[in-house]
Image 1 (cartoon, helix red, strand yellow):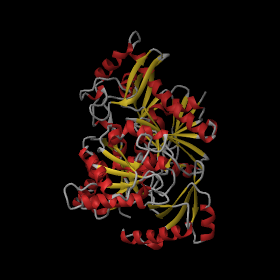
Image 2: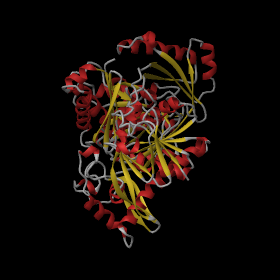
Image 3: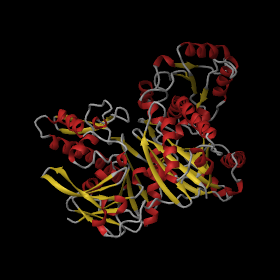
Image 4: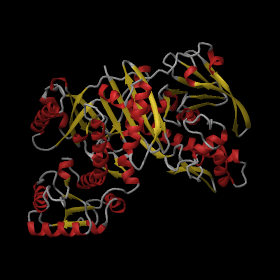
Length: 634
């Protein structure tokens, strides 16, 4: 098997998981928010060097699969970088967009004056006048969502035909026109409208970045299409990807990685907690399976695109810390990759969680990213001092640290409550660059007995996407002749697979049926009667056609371990600060800890891209997979 490249871009760091000939390597570089193709290239170059390729071209020529997840969609909404949209709706719904909850669209992505009502979509003169008014108002993309288009899409199609005649593709003024009926056949005008509007808002940024990345990789010698991670849990080439399907795709990789590792360990329940630079993302896997949401929300707005269930909250290493009347808070706003925390020395002055960790002694300022970046402890201390008030700077830093623990623990506890799982019945997978700093204390707060920190935890979402299948999803109507629609979707999947160079005979077909709140999956084996019964009364349904991927191996560490127990991996000691006062913590090299080694807290276990805090009263044991497992001695 040749190489695989799996890259996940976050708000602060871009992570890579590279495999070749049964070995795996991890890479972490800074995200370049002004141009995500730049950090993508940086990650590929570093990955080529780590795997021993002489050039990037040599790596790409040897690469069989290149998977990529990104924060493009999330950033488009947060930063409001999407285009000005023009929306056409049925008469009487210009202000409510078919439901009270869609008023949020007007606050978030639409201007009220860019919403137009249409009484007769087949009246070409009226349609031309309305479209012209929206374009004069600055609309760059048009969205059409009529009230009953799930059962009769002819009105929407008539409007699109007028737009294409008036502004054909060969004109510079060609206008993209997206129909709600093209996005989903599911009923419910409120969610259909939101789905179409959000997809249209994300579309231009996606096209600009993803096609550029694809073309750049081809120019550099990669012979296969770039595969984009979908929030539904699969990958597909750019040409077969809708913008909304990529929203929050990075954390989905963490959920799939959690399912894979839970299966490897035979765990009934595992909570995945990804603490990155910008956010904390939480998932729960049971019996080795990820959970899906049939009716998820994007920026608080319900959409008709099923997604893997991941709860996200603003709070990570780059999140800005403040002091309030009730104590210290972290996030949701972030210093990002640039200027970043004050200790980066790039112009940032706001205190962040990372600055607090430097003050507490948890992070070695000379060994950040394996020494590639030197942090400035004086700047970190000065930033935290600004919010300390009458508190000692170390006490303020501890308050910030605990604030992020509370943010993460609250999200973990909420996930467990929603899914009806008790803390003592599961384990915590702590990953992301900051997972090891907070995992032990989050587990204590939630009554979880063990914390797993994998050798590849710092790039865990990138590892998770390395096992994702190529997957095409076809929405099905749930009224009319559902079996005929299912047969047609299956035939289309076979044609699409052949067109993409896949083996149609290798496809696996699954029928996904939405119930009240979950997605049920049934293997489609040609029993059309059973399929019709499954579709009866469904709120929504899809056919998923999958080509199973070859699993990239987990990275079980980069060295064989010293063989001398903890003493052989000990790097020294460092003073850390806690409410009871300063403590001396032993410092260990993560990659030199051999299987069977036990480290007692207080201790710091350092890798090139993360640090694990073993608090007093806890111990860390390295198992045969080089996973660090933290348990309480108390």
